Image (cartoon, rainbow, N blue to C red; front, side):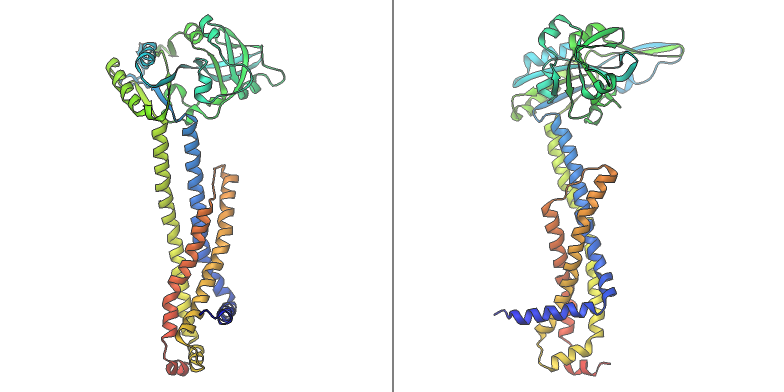
Length: 430
């Protein structure tokens, strides 16, 4: 039967004994504090990084398959001085047509051309990406319509010079006026602004972004009908240097396929690979499946948490060893006190309980402070490093629970050693 008053008295004696050596107690607790803090902070940083990666992948669409044009290695050499060359590679309109007619389980198909060009309005000139696409861009990519409208099927059919732009681009081109129904200049053509949109991610952060996308943020984009992009800009991009030029002919930079459900994705990926391999002599494309990336990210997250947790647990181990070391020294210092208690009738379990209480108080006290610091560190990391961090309840519970367990495990041997001292020998100790 549990004797509550006796336990409370033992706890009181244990705390009183620790307070007799405040500096030593504080230094002993530091190992537990740093251990608990590192467990929480490292798991929070890992959780935040994993969450950000998964959100970027989810923004691509779990039902989507993305095919990018990729320049083959053998075509990446720039022409020598005084010479010219034209590299032709990548996805074609024929590829898009074949995919649309032969692929089972297909809900939408979205071909895209991506052109680097500056957008001008009056004296404002902003480097941007011109994306030629279809009206289905809106539901497939989750583009948010802020004002006006997006591209329509009539715009595509009639090759209208209309555009939708992101609010970031609009704020740079039209800082003092409403952009709707105004005309912006791209190259030698003018395009009427019919809508403002907001993107949820960046092409340069998307896995597998090709050379055409490199270094360009998705929030500086201008969207025009694909037919308009094809007729106004053509399919050949020229890069000139002194005495020579290089040209690239790419019909489509990207094709996004949205399947009816996730079950249709893996069979479709195999069919797409087989079809493209048949019609492309070179490997000038890449297939990205966000669903597979998401699964890999979740698996990586679990592995990452185990690794970070294991590294942080080493700090707790060091803290536990520090507690054991101090408690063994304490047993030596208090040998005579133990002998007196045994002579007055204290049992072995009373001695064990007293020393265990002291170690548990040390570890739990350090655990409480460590949890507080461990919650503060991720907040500071988020504020100064601009990194997402997520402190989870299970990480707090795990770190605090391990700190208490550390006190018990590393306190058992010193407590047992104290309890097994001979009362007579202990009383003779000076």
